[in-house]
Image (cartoon, rainbow, N blue to C red):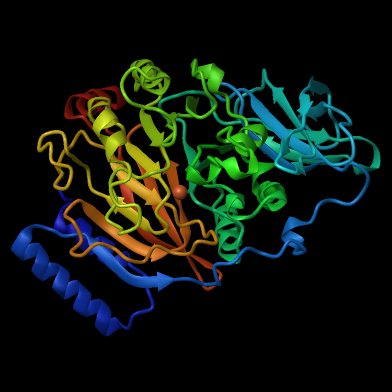
Length: 481
Ligand SMILES: [Fe+2]
C-alpha cells in the first residue's frame, strides 16, 4: 500500500537539501525508474545536519538564567489538567522557601479575578535537594479563551498566559508540534526556537527530556533544573503533554536511588486520573478533535498488566464521531529502520499492534532513535513476521521524531536497503507539526533545523482513518449538500 508514484514524486520535489540541481534530477530519474520496476520505494535523504557539537549548553548560559529576586518562581510549565481541555496544571519552582501556592488568573492582563490553590513539595535525589515544586490545578475554564496568570508574590511575582483549546468537536482545528529526545544542547535550542515559530498550540513530547541522567551524583538534579528553565519559554504558555523515555528511568543503585522515574514524576504531572489510569506514566486526553493516548514503553504492558488493562478500556471509549483523530504517543518506535535501537519495541508491537489496527489509529509518534523517519501504513498482523510487514490500510502511520538534539548526537546509520515500509528518513535534527483542519484532513510537516532556519522537509496530507472510510465519506457528502 505504498502511496501513489505521483505522491512520491511530490515528496522528492519537496526535498529541500543543498544538493545541486543535477543531483536532484539524478535522484528524481532514479526514483522514477524504481517506481516503474517495483512500485514505489521510500526515500533515504542523504542530507545529514548536525549544526552544533553534541554537548550541553554551559550552565552559566543565559538560556538557563533563573529570574532575579528572592524566591522568584521559575521552571514554569503547564499541561492539560483534565480529560477534555477545560483545565490546566501549572507547575513552578521556588528556591528559597515554599512561598505562595496560589495562582491568580483572569481574562485580561494584570486583572486577576480568580484564584486557585495548589500544593508544594520537595525531594532529595542522592545528595541533591530540589527547590520547592508547586503544582496547581486551574479548572472550570472556558474553551477557546486566553487566560492570563500570575504566580509568586511581591516584587518577584511573574505573569504568563495560555489559550484554552476549542470545544470537543469533530471539526475543531488545532495545531500540534511533536518533539522528542530534546536534551539541552545548542541543537536542542534550535529545535525549541523553531517549534515556537510554528504557532503550534500544543506540544506532544515523546520522551527523553533533560538527559540529566548522563551526569553524576548531585549534577543529575542540577541538570533537571536547568532543563526546566530551558523549556519555560514555551512550556509556560503552551501545554506540553508528557510521555516518558528511557532517560527518565534513572535506576541508580550505586547512589541508593532505585525508585524509577523519581525526578520526572516529581516535576512533570499528567492528568492521568481523568482517564482512569492508575499511573501518571500512561494516560489519555481529548483536545479539540483529537483523542490522544500516551503509553509508557518502560512500564509493564503485557497482557493483564495495569497498562494493558487500561488501554483495552480506553480504546473502547474513543468516539470518532466526536474526536475523529486518534493519536498515540510512545517512546520506543514500533517501526523504524535505523541501526540504533533496531527492534527494541518488538514486544510492544506484538502486544498492541492488532488493537492499533482494529481501532484505526491515525498516527503513532515515537522518539528514542535520534533521526527522523516516517512509515507507510503497514502491519505485521497478516504476515506474522516482524521483519516483513505488509501494506495495511487499517494501520497507523508510524513517525519517529527522536531528533530533538540531545548530547548523544545523531543516529546516522540507517539499515540498507531501505525497507519497503519506510517512506522517508533523514539523520538531521528537527521537529514535526500536525495541523488538524477538520474531521477529514490534517497537514503534517517534519521541519529540519538548517543553519538556524526551520526548513519543512517531509510533508503529507493525513486523511482521517475513520472519516476516510468510503461509507462515512458518502454520508458526510450527503450532509454537506
Ligand atoms: Fe530514548
